[in-house]
Image (spheres, rainbow, N blue to C red):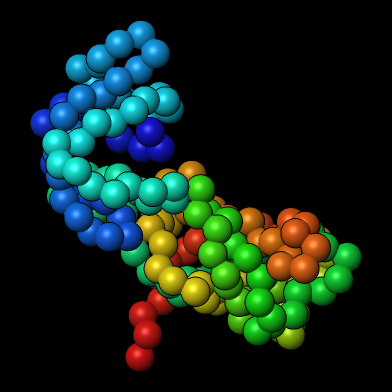
Length: 175
């Protein structure tokens, strides 16, 4: 459980499908629990037959996580080769891996002065703020609210190496 708590009978929503249900049981290694809290590894048994796949997120029905395919994010570049805006990468958020592209940096952060500097790309060990576009919508929370649901890594599609990491600020709306 990445945040909050869960109890049998709680109304939930599965994202990205949006299908509702209720928690029937909370099963742990030691048996059924009356409540599970953030940090615990448990199995949730739902009242309805729902298809919940790897990467899906179960959240409270009255306070669901966000669902979006475009974000503003702080990106930390960790590869020797520069980030190529518009190039296809993979983004891994939790258990979901989706296709992504990064826009050109809005600015790069000078780590010594915290000044915002103009840039067209990110080089090794640079940090900048970019727009991230995903192939399809994923469940998320801003990093400031939930560190586990608001971070991601960037993977090179060709080499499968981690080339960057990021912190989500907020979802962007399409015009």
